[in-house]
Length: 300
Image 1: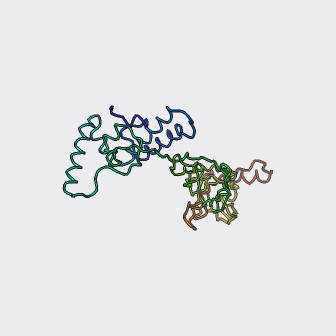
Image 2: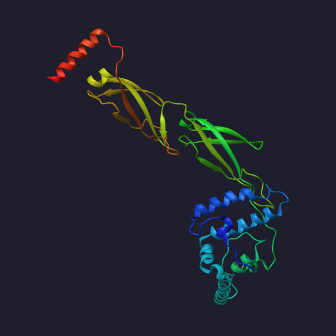
Image 3: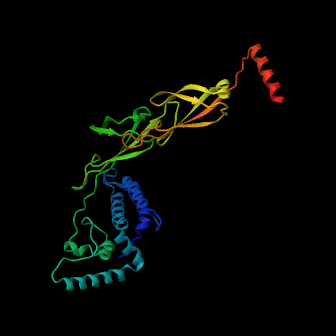
């Protein structure tokens, strides 16, 4: 029986993180799932290999053993068998120790030999059960929609799902609703539903997580002399004092006037305002005279 390179099965590097392993498995399992490939023996075989690879590499203890012995797995299997026999001799008639945590049955000969899986079920291969296919849905919302927590009803494969959408959810964010995917195969658990949020920003604010940014036009006279202006925030208007001599591009922060922090009640980001000074273009003759006088004073 030949050594199986589980890293090649999942098309990942040997230094892959747990998250990368999970992502690779999920992507390929969707492609080769029996529900999507009925009566396709090659796809079924590939799906079994993917599950086998995932069960080994996603378990730190099993991955360590697999990495330790590699292509010398036969010696490793013998070593583990001897170790288990020694442990049983110390335990009397206690339970067999070793690698566990696997769902039973229908593994490759390599897997059963290396991980001693067949000894745990009397050498009898069992019918393998598989988790159902995951569903994916996209929910389109406006920025205003996600400013407050609210409920929505989604219809997925003919079933209505009542969903609470927390304020502050981000564009492209994905949430998982367990058990709302397809039925499992041979008694396996249901798949999950993954919802991707697509949020349209139809406001005058730029959003970066919980912070908001906007540009406010400021007339030249207020910029020079200072004064009070009214500016828009996401949930209303506020009055703002402008300091005399404000320069173009000056930024001010309105604390707590940004966007809600996701799943943090009554916590908000900040609103950052940039001033854009408007230079007058249609000056009256009197205004021109006054600016001319000012220019002369500047030269003194």
